[in-house]
Amino acid sequence: MIDQEQMYERYKRLLAEYMEGKNEETLYNGQLFSRHMIECGVSPEDVLSVHIEIMREFFPNMDERLESSFDFLLEAMIGYGLAYREHQNLRFKQRQLETEIDIAANVQQSLLVSAVPEIDSLDIGVISKPAKKMSGDYYHFVRDEQNFLSIAIADVIGKGIPAAMCMSMIKYAMDSEPEQRTKPSAVLENLNRVVEQNVDPSMFITMFYGLYNEKEHRLYYASAGHEPGFFYSSQKDRFEELTAKGRVLGLDRSTKYREYEKLIMPGDMIVLLSDGVTECRTKKGFIERGEVVDLIRKRMDRSAQEIVDSVYKELERLQEFQLRDDFTLIILKRRV
Amino acid sequence: MMMKNAPSRVEIHNEWDIVRARQSGRDYAKELGFGNVDQARIATAISELARNIYLYAKPGVITIEVIDDQGKKGLAITAKDDGPGINDLRQAMEDGYTTSGGLGAGLPGVKRLMDEFDILSEAGKGTKITARKYLR
Image (tube, rainbow over the protein chains, first blue to last red):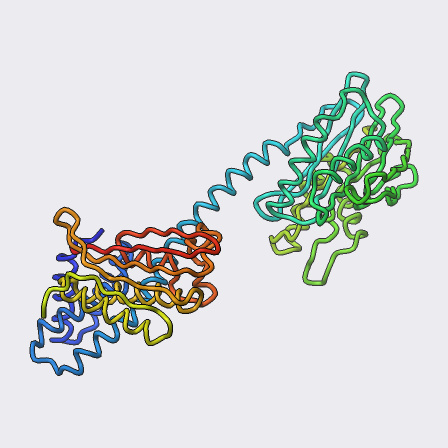
């Protein structure tokens, strides 16, 4: 807090100086002083009150009507003073909230990060970036002793904190899946029941779940309304849609999921993504899925991680560095 | 002017009564020796409390009295009504809750204008707010 008397004296000196000479330097000093008062939390009505007192001191025989006009102004400024202090308090609260969100985002990041397994036959690359501080995207890899790799990618419809809270639940539900290998369709059916029971009906989750058999190089997969990925066949040198049909999680507890299967040859690629990748909005409008494919194709000779990083950078630039939705891109490449 | 020891009691039925309550508070504050800004703050606080009664809970009563708490002199304002009461006090005491709707300074404003603030409210029975300001 600034000392009342000190403030009074300094204000008085500046005011007297200005009334004498009307010079710009005094005004400049007055401006600096006002900044100091703001820092010290002095309210506008306090400044006015000091001003009035000093004017009374300088002009003891001030016109009574002029004097009353000051009182009137003071009364009017009380409301502004209140609004000012409320504003300060709200700003303080906002900073507190931001700190809280930062902490929550850190907690979430540590939940979300799933170690990418090192596998001889597969080159795996992952990138996952939240649009805001917290993400509604989720992915994970689990590899068991029989050399089966399970891959999940999920997207909570919506973004920000509500989506992130929902995502954490999916994470716990996935962790409590039985240790032994489960068919992708069964995993989705189980998760669907969890989501239907525990998540607000206005929230939906899409998910792709795959199980990769490293011996036979077969991918078994099922999808709950998730953005279709791509399959690259090196033999045909062509990208195809990795189509899989299924309802989003949480709609109907008795939903059944169909299971698909694909043989993966050396040099083939599986591309999994969240809709934040395909719903990039550039100046020209939404980008086409084909453009994503082109971006990948241009970089195909690089490692999986280099591809996803580079595609992300390119799309980030095209969107002028503002993600509108959480972005997750996964590439699995069978080594030649 | 004689020292006002007896409390002043203003019933709030209409906007005129709000003005009377303000006036009474200002007179007390002036006489006790509050400066100009504090007089205006006290008048504004009374205004807010009386206006709340007038808008949502009339009739009610504003009482203004001189207090002496172990030599600490000041003014106590009490606003009492038998109106609908305030359901969520925490919300009512939150910044930005009433002001954003343009309803005025609201209860947090009154709290800021005064030194002490206390509120009791029961849904369906009414509200009692006590606010004090001390001479420095």
